[in-house]
Image (tube, rainbow, N blue to C red; front, top):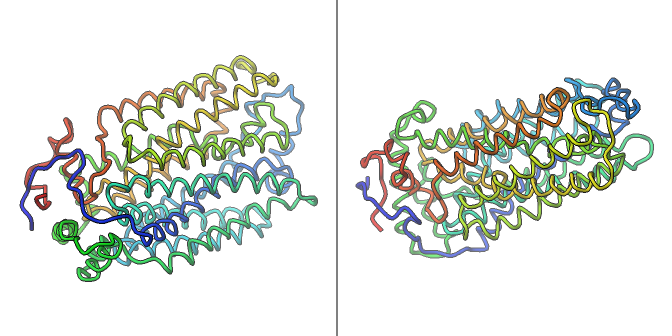
Length: 508
């Protein structure tokens, strides 16, 4: 095992190699795991605003929706069963992520992707053919199992395959696929809403089988990562794969760090027990708080319920769906921007700028809604106000996607040492799914009771999460994934938890 050596934490040692077409191919295929997550996020909000879907499964909500505009607009969609349709998936994903940890560690990342894609495929079929609430919820549960497995394995796979200097660009490809899935779903909702006969929602839900098929079949053609091969006791296979993905025979330093990481990993018999050790305090904190803050940003209010929210604010019929398509377009464009700049500007700058932009936008949206609907919820939204609301929601979405959206998945996937990586990523996913469930289940009720103050509530969390990044999250760009311990050792706060003999990297 290599001795402890302090190094420059700004970027770690530069490993030789180049970005090969093979790495690009594997990362593109793996990132399609984000499509299933994004498609579901986008589709659920659309179908819950379709009258035929509501009349069949949630008639109480349908008749409330038909009431005159003199009723309380804040409460027209408040229904626990309707919220359970959206949120049940994320409870299943939470549980599934813990099982996915074992599969990812013992069998490799790609088999976890395969399991996720297959479960999602079966769930999509059930939802598209649903005849009652029970079928819907069972289908949603299987979709959740698929998302739990995919979200646990895909970010890890991409971070391990990517060269350190381009890990941000390739890693945020997962978020690009999530946002592409959201936009695709919203476009499909817009089209299927026009299908006569009231069956458009079946196409919306059933077409989730398409991205599920892509990741299920695609995972069969993916290789294991060098890190996973090393972790599972295949050093020569790891060396060969590392040589192939880096496009050079000069892999000595990177391979030596993998061997060192494996030696440490062999001493860890119980990752779930070890992750609470003092030396992993920084990683455990990030595994919990980054996904927690990501959900408390309020983004899934937009992602899940955009059409419902826009209808609540006075947008009618197709107009609400068109507005949600606009926000989906902003998500995709923002993801592309992130991929281009994340390895240049770094993670911290994007977190801080995006957080400030989200904060201002939420305050403005809350104020505009308060001016028109007040506390009573009775009122109308003139075109000028409506345009301003859409504008600032789009600015909010843009701020999110290049900060907590993309980086909320990228940063956790790159900071965990090999010996606890699968367990830590499961914690990251499970916390994300837990609070996604809470927001999905509670939002419409919170909107009914907190009214426009709900946007101030999320803005307040924006202040907290931006301050957290400013104080406690170090820069991780360009740092090799197996040398990330040096980042924590060089941090003003986390260095107190990392001893010199906790560092096991080769000299540069």
